[in-house]
Each structure stands twice: as C-alpha cells, then as structure tokens.
Length: 323
Image 1: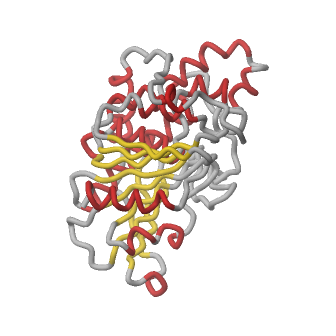
Image 2: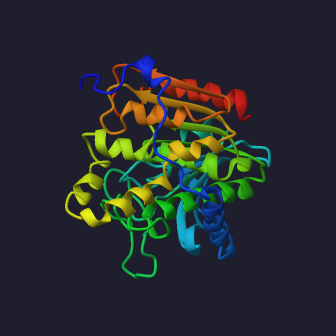
C-alpha cells in the first residue's frame, strides 16, 4: 500500500476539526459514577498453577458498565509484593483476552498484567469469554461487527460501554495490586482504549502505550480509511440516512482525539504511514492533542502492525517511567 494520507510534515501539525460535545467531562463522569455505584467486588480463581509457575495466573471477573461482569486475566510474578508495577492490557478489534500464555512476556520481566476481555467480541482471531447483552442467557463472545451497535445515541452506544469497562479495569487492577498508578497498553482498538482510560481516569494512569490506535478522529477515519472496521459506519449510514446527524454526534463522545486533551500520563504511541485501517492522520490527531510528556514511533513502510523492534522501546519506556 503506498502512502495515501498527509505528508509527515503535515501530520505533525494536523489537528482534528471535530468539535467536542458540550459537557463531555460531566457526561463521562456520570457514566463512570453509575458503573461504580453498582459494582461488586472482583473475583479471582487460580488458573493452571502447575503449568504457569513461576507466574501466578488468575481467571478474574470485575464489574464494568452497568455492573456487567467482565472477564479478565490477572498475571503476576510469583510472590509479587505490593509495589509490583502493573500494566493493563486491552485487545484489538474482534479479539478477546485469549490464553494466559499469550501475555506471559511482561510477568517474566517482573510486571503484573491485567488483561481485559472485550465484551461481545473474541470470536475472530483471539478467544473471548464475555458477552455484551448480559441479560441474555445465551450471550457470549461473538464474531461481531460492533461499530454501529447503538450508534443512535451516545448513552446506548457499544463503545460507551466498552470505554466504561476499560476505566473500571484500570481501577480494579490498581486495587488488586495495591498500587497508586498503572500503565495501560494496547494496539488498534486496544490502543484506543489505552488512550481513553488515560483520559477518563488520569489519576490512575502513569504510562500510556497506544500502538496504531483506533477510534481517533473518527469522523475523518470513516471518510478516509478504506479498510474495516471504520467502513462499517459509512456502509450503515449509506442506507440509514436519517440517522447520520445522530450517529456523528454519538461518535464525538468516544473520539480519542477529543478525549486525549485530558491525558496526564507519559505516552508512547506508534503509527504506520501505510496503515489503511487507522490512517496516520487519525493517529496524529490524537497525539497532537496530548499535552503531557509524549513520543511517537513513526514507521514509514508499515501498515496496521507493530514492528517487533518497537517492543523493546516500550520495555525501556516502562522501565524508565513505571518502575
């Protein structure tokens, strides 16, 4: 795929032209307060102790949006103390929490990891265990297209629930580990969730790693990105034309380019200049709104993937700013 977006010198100055909805902070505070009010304590069950030693693995449930029970993995080095640094990990579109073995690198290096399952996903490339419609006894992981689920109003939108789940995951991980602040990390949809949590619960997030993040400058993404999942929205609105104003308004409430202005964590992002899933300008739209200490890895010949070399840069960043 050739370069198709703005030149790099313009990307470094690009800003979103989407207007922030009025009262955004108060609106999100109401969502989070409502979730906390109906939350019940997390539960942990030791998982396969004989094969994962010396890492302790716990099959975990915590309360997300609406009090819904969200599955997670909690991995920590055996005998970890209360000052063990914690990384909360979020998953890309279509995937779920997978298996603990997929998240073993950081515990091997001395970090605890809290891996949030993604409600109503986990049926495409990594297994999940959490349904979206939890009042339905048949609810479970799905190979789902969720971009337009409830898009007619922000209160009922799928990503409103998912952002709330993610904020509650950060709060739960901090409570379980007994630490004041954590790191958040993810790629694509997971990168968007990392940015969202750093913005929604800034007091709890010290470090934010967001690779090729999704859900940034969404109104540009849905008109520029040639590949799914952004394409789900224009495909839907091409026929449901009466919903266009309401849908575009809803998207403003979960746009990480707007939420990013609230981030106080030290940030490390990455972008591929040949990314047709999350176009480079949408990533820079979020990055350029961050006023906290930040850096971005620019990969000129990379699409919607994270080069292996970037992992060591992230590990150095965690060592310097989380330990």
